[in-house]
Length: 373
Image 1: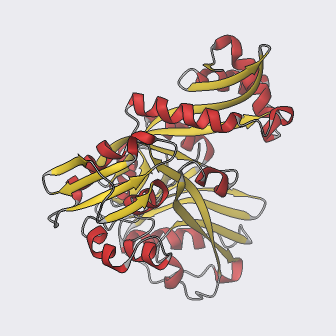
Image 2: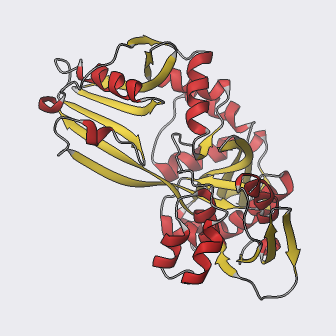
């Protein structure tokens, strides 16, 4: 039987996390984790009052263009080895889907330990990133602009830069002040200014390596200025690693573009409640010819139906006949913008005749996710 953990259960939850994820917390870290747990729902399965498996559900919001959508973040999924292969994680995930629906969290995200495992339950990749690795000899500045670099702290202006960048994408986290505080505690900050702030990086320098965790330029000037700032560390570091969003053009601007660029599949997402999601999604679709969409969702049966989509909104329809049919994974990947209708056709998920209909409602925004939970 699944129940929600209470304060008296938190020590067991921390012990399971330490065992499953192979780390050891200090007393100070344990107290911090206990405080954070009070802002989450933690679902557990017990055997004789002993915690056997657990899952954390965190309340977030994500940017979908200029709109904010309630999101349930799934994390801390763990089971002791002696209780594995009993279907406990399956039970916890299905319970969590119902909890998210009841709470109005119409999408969900998680960082997978194994991608194919979560695909079975309807989650699909929605964001990847590229890591650019540059050696000292290739830290060459490119033609500069007239802007300036400032090193400093998280400010209202910097938060606005992040939000403006996020609103050009689908899926980025709506960051709270507490979330920004954690960023500031871990990373150094450099911002680029022309007439106003136009971009920033978050970075660390350790043992001869500069690691840039966020590279967020809003303008070409910021892109050049931030890269040139990175190059000024050539006497301090041997290697620079820059985490880049999909589509970032910086590698092509370098004097030597033949550098190591690796792609990493990153976070997964799932539409938890299709009808309200579609109602929000279609607000950005513009004008299109009405069509019917059938969604198949084995583990969230409230989603499995046919929807009539038009400029007037979303309407449920009876019957199995539809112009386009997608399972929940394919629907999620398309709706977020991770896969296009052309991609789905190339993968054999839809026919050529369905491409035009799906593309007519595409937001044409790329996905991006810069955080971890």
